[in-house]
Length: 158
Image (cartoon, rainbow, N blue to C red; front, top):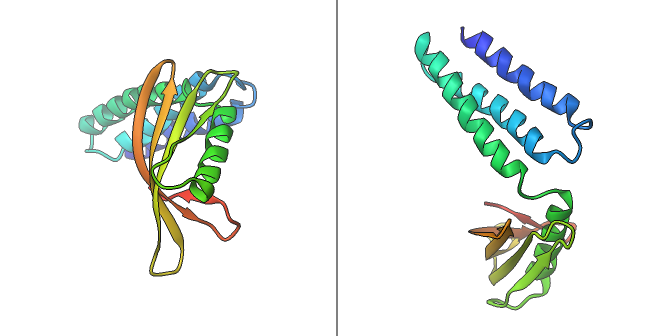
């Protein structure tokens, strides 16, 4: 039973990856399919027998809902603008000052506000930051840490 649930979930995710090019521009659909597959896969790890079937069903529904929400949010252009702003902001922006990005095509926007840099015990430079993302007029805030990579880019750690 568990193997069947895992196989079905893996098949859903695989199909989504195969058909993704044909669904280009349909972020919400891809997000829903991938989320459903991943949620089903996670749900299959819960319980056994009928309890496992319930886990797969609940995981699939929750995964589809979450994937749908994420899929309709940021596209590749949004992510590129956000990443470029983060790299510039982490490298050049004084602590406490905010840098902003906006994708004129989607209307999505956001900000980064870095905190003071510090050096880890391994010698890597890192900065905590506050991030705001506005999608469809809805504002979401998050906090994280980014560290400078050997190539000079900054990568979010959490």
